[in-house]
Length: 167
Image 1 (spheres, rainbow, N blue to C red):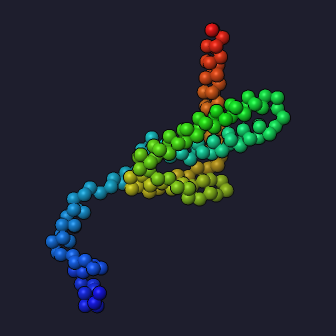
Image 2 (image 1 turned 90 degrees about the vertical axis):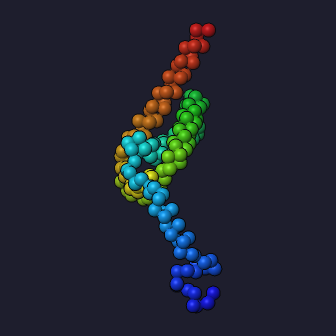
Image 3 (image 1 turned 90 degrees about the horizontal axis):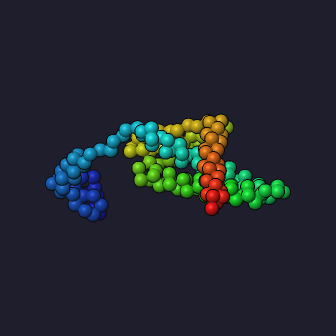
């Protein structure tokens, strides 16, 4: 392209930009509603927290299952099967919560790992911020969640065995 046509605002690359087109483009941009940059709701923050904590819980359950399978415990088959079922339930919830994040247009990134805390960055409806969790909080919360999954598994087993005994 010749040097005479550069920088005059009428030519971009090899296309001509007429003033009418520029005005139309600007009016369309001005009329489109801007993104709401509201902070996430409490429910959205809980969803992000679940998406951070459940993979940690899954890792712990799967690690314990492998340890049990290699042990010499008498009931290792039962314990390993229970751990496999727990891991399956947790894995399903991880997938469900990640899908919910995508549907709600929330992006979550691990920002940094420090000695005592994990820092995650998120973008929710244009609002950017961080979530910081101490490792002590993560340990306690993961323990509680694994306990809930275990109790629900025990309840289901007890219900099934009670129904089987009635027959």
